Length: 86
Image 1: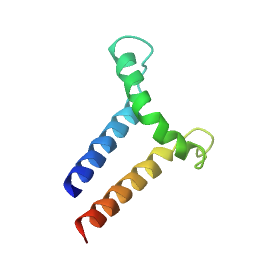
Image 2 (image 1 turned 180 degrees about the horizontal axis):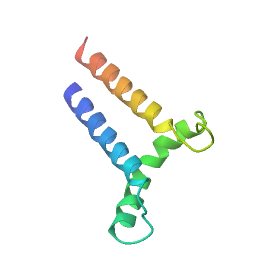
Image 3 (image 1 turned 90 degrees about the vertical axis):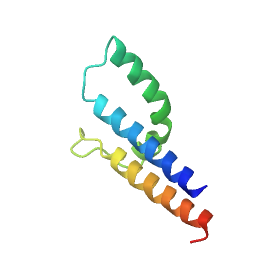
Image 4 (image 1 turned 30 degrees about the horizontal axis):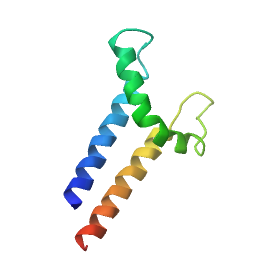
């Protein structure tokens, strides 16, 4: 069970990273827009929790995904350890 939690955490982390990298590209039409829309539905509910707390640096650079990934990795690791009995 703990392996599944770690794998799901890694998969979601990868999805967030792809979403963040895709935000640097113009995604106003075509397949990139469709992929971006799907990833936004998957990632935005989680990322928005951190966007409320972590302000952008200089008003432009959003570092909230870094904190979101750190918390996700820490939480999955902790949950996996708890489920496996340390």
